[in-house]
Image (cartoon, rainbow, N blue to C red):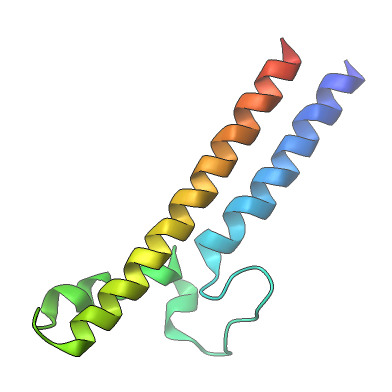
Length: 96
């Protein structure tokens, strides 16, 4: 019973380390976000400019820059979710 609890606890800690930086930081786990950053209070702050992209002319340099940043952030979110899924599956396999 204790071994199962330890496995679940390790999984939860790993999920927290994987998902929290994506969900709550703009820069990631090792670089502090600037103080007072508007995006900080929002979930997935890296995706904050999504509405701005829609309002930006598609043929502008600003559109390209925002789109590139958002694609990178989507990749960061996707990678975190894939890592979290793998960790959950590995933990469940160990518990069987």
